[in-house]
Image (cartoon, rainbow, N blue to C red):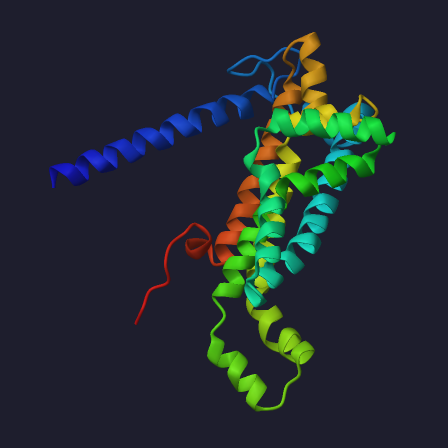
Length: 267
């Protein structure tokens, strides 16, 4: 009983410690002036209007972040699928090597990967273009859909494949009617994981943009030269809301316990 009480108190204190910074950021975003105060002075939603509609710098940065996040996540899934499928289907050394290479960028320190990409794109002559930011983030976060899709493939009941083969289904038909539907939640989960991390990522994007364009994270960094402003707090709130929405969707429609490493319950 005592241990349970201590555990509950610890969890409550942890929740408070996590909530307090978020509360301060949300309050700071309501300041009417250009300086962040908490509690906010003359609360207003004007900073939200600036961030999403009227302030060209922030609106452009938000658009760039959305484009890079969605496109890089989609590209990461498209590249990860054949790697995961080959590793599951064949299991040969070539598939294992390719899967390992695909996961390596995520294991490297971001600054090492960012510097390496900066030199590579500069040598090729494509440094600073938007599509290079998309490719860079796809390479960085490809490990996420690679892992989730692999988990989905491993969760397929082999009896379903045997039943489809017994009924005369060809390989493409089995893939379309059995494999793809059962792995779709894992594919979507990998897409959303990559999307959220891409939207929040700063270090790699800093090295590959060459100041040609800014995402929200880069614009926050650039704005720090003029001090902290309430608009930066609005950007932070946007990150929080998107992360909560995405992970809630994964928890609702994806197999979150299995994605987090839990073994399925055996009846």
